[in-house]
Length: 170
Image 1 (cartoon, one colour):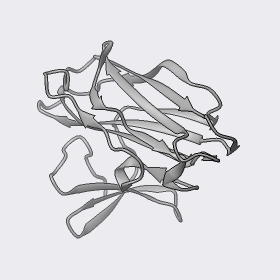
Image 2: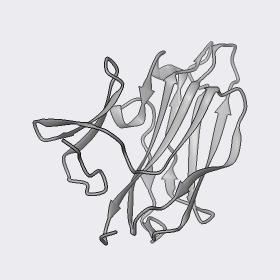
Image 3: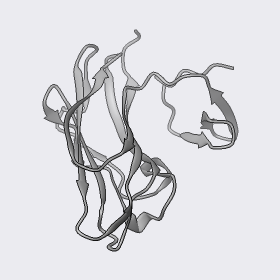
Image 4: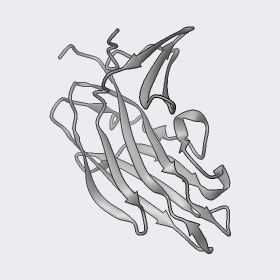
């Protein structure tokens, strides 16, 4: 069964099926394996050893409202201090989308971590109109890596996904 992630419901949850490598969309008690997700996303492959700025997430595929910015790491940073980590600052046409940027620090634990699963700090989306996006707008992200302590494992395969609720049909 194919799902349509552009139409978000209040009780929608996106999960990662580690055993099979799928994204899983759960609506209420029903789960669907997703063949693909159309939400714009940026992936930094490999270790994130320095901050990255102005990285292209993509072009907004549909007019809508940004509901969330999800940050995940395939392997979280391991450091001698719990405050070292990764923060994502996403923007649309140069305007920051969040008042609180999603962040995952070493205190969240090692291994796969995701703000959508309660790890780290979840994004808080602006409510000043910036969250209203139009098809064709440009999405970018700045990834800020902090490392004040001794890092034994770098954040690996960092992904930022912009979740957009469509307000107009494509």
